[in-house]
Image (cartoon, rainbow, N blue to C red; front, side, top):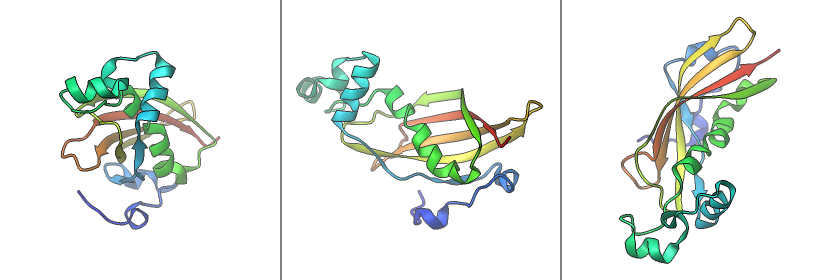
Length: 161
């Protein structure tokens, strides 16, 4: 794991140099906190209130992780904010989340953890309709843990029209 300051590690990705970063890491986001309050709010949004997420006392007693854990989809839902930070230099007029090609939840994120996203640009494909399809590999690291929380190939459509 590299620990440079983010500023020097992050390429100045923009619309004109996009193709030269294909196949390369384009940086690591800031840390994002995943406190119990965020997990509870997500449980309320999605109505997924399994005890392993929201019952702190029971999770401490009975969970194999010794603490409540974030929903996998909560961790996944942090991809946009971490991506905006790293892809902001592209300054598209419009951008649309087009989906995921592959997603694996690898390790649980315990309440109170911090996560950050390492993004690698896999492809930037101009399409006939004027949009450009960006395919990125997102590896969400958990602070202090050897295995990532998740690895996801994310698809985004960008337009400069």
